Image (tube, rainbow, N blue to C red; front, side, top):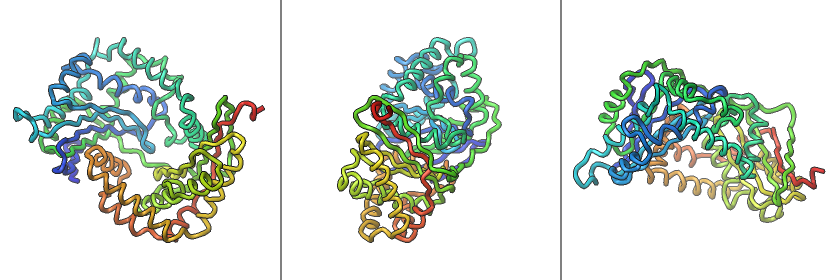
Length: 422
């Protein structure tokens, strides 16, 4: 990957994509996360991707995408470690496949810049009616959180663990903040974002020099004072293992256990934990699946995941209410086993093979390839897929045991039945 700074805090990253028929162009704005503007930043992409000053309504925008051979827009706002990321991206056919020789790649980037840097305004701010529509949609989304009990349990466990840490800011914002948002306040937040964000443009399978010129021209009137990207903050092990319960009228209970290591993962540690997590609870051959689900029949599912930027290992499971305590003990027993004993050579080989296949597949998809490169940029490691695969294939059994031994159970959150709670 080639990375060029074209202005203070503005970078163009080129990823070769000769084997793809489609190209992908994304502009990512990265700022340190903040509780105060989290909800407004969560709303912004839903407002920006529907129109712009040059194309002022969604219908005309849809027609423009149709004219560009069915190009697709993707936008999102999310937290990444201690940072907030807002992204506008467009993917479509490469120039080589245009029937009339059109410069599609330039059109894609021009449109992305129009959406991001030249939005449709009314009296110098966002359209008030459109802001109200997006506010109501976001409020409905936040109110619906409880409908997905698995995700609700995970979110509640995370809130209980992260508390006021900058790593715990909600990606989708906060319901209690929505009413106060106005067209004026949202535009002020947007204006501040353009001024302070670190901007990372990623170009997969397209001309980076042309992209740099279009991006520079689109930003020429923006006064910039870019902020430094926030560094990740590991969640420290707690003094006590905390237990939380939420009684709900459900047939199936939910169980989430979060463990902390107290350190942010290096690239080597990330590779070790990828393998360790796969063996522990990431594969159909994993210990949680085989021992807790299959052999003991204590759960409907049981999976593990690892977040290197916070140093948190998460296990979540669907359980019968009556089996919850036994399931929790069984999960912690499997954790202890991995902390005190070496995994088998076969387990190591199975996990390494599965992960190698998965990560090799990243290079076959422009979206996955760009996601990998951008996430590496956020981590500040910039590893290629090939570099990471080399780390994966050299992970040892002792490294896995040592890595797992660094985790301390911190929070257990459960959704219980109403009758059980009584």
